[in-house]
Image 1 (cartoon, rainbow, N blue to C red):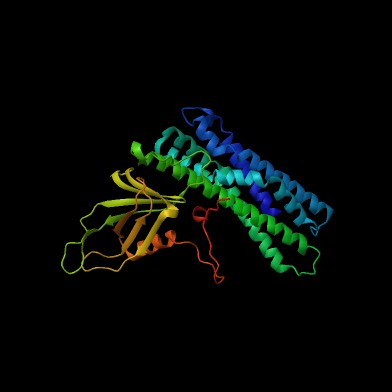
Image 2: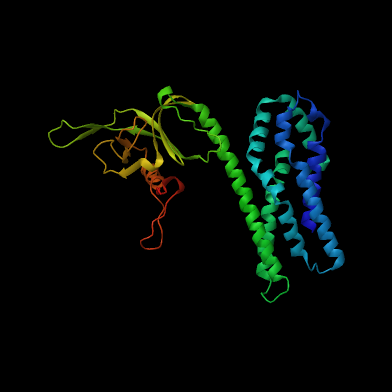
Length: 344
């Protein structure tokens, strides 16, 4: 209860001092969109904490031993977890917006410096206050994990403590997934602007309702095969450099145009891509991969020999191109992008 009171006090500083600052209503200091990103969910989170604190205080007044505390927290999380999930989902956008404002907006920096020097902040920054909700829900889970280890299974509070820990674990997992999903979405928006598809092979990277996200990317060098040698094939590293983008359902092969622009030269459904390790050859022809596009952008089968920068990169590419392994003998696991299709 003491920690919740301290948390509520800090949220009040965030809400009243920063979020409600009249100067932040000035568009020359903070735009409406940026203000919404930074502070849009602050008031709702503070009200959640206020209600939980009131419930804990009522529980303490009813029983000094805090019988029923676990039920109070359980009911609170069940009722208000969406508020925490929404806040944590927006965490990436908050971080990015605050960083951008500090780098580009001198008016914002001036006001922020004044607010952070206020005695109520106790030398804490706005960033520290904005991180509090995610930290709080995580610490609540840790608190109940500790409580559960201290309780005997015969204790009256054990079942309710265990039940509360379960909903806290689920809430934290949903908060983390919300943050990851938002990060993936922002990354896909950025990549949709960076990948330049020729008109004849245009693929909407960011489709409506799409669950596509980036799995791995990296630069490789194409190794040319010279089949005219008398004694086998000779390899040369004179081929072009490609940047590969492997999405959940698609492999995109590109050439770098600039620091943040890539020309797409080919693509293939992820389920139709095969990667195999090749033995190293003398010289610089090392860390080789045989990559086969069974059906590329022209509906043809294409083979490429690619050289990675190091063994770690090669193994990572092999790992993401392989289906998951089951511990059960004879069982085959499939990723969502690689599920067999059944025609009725």
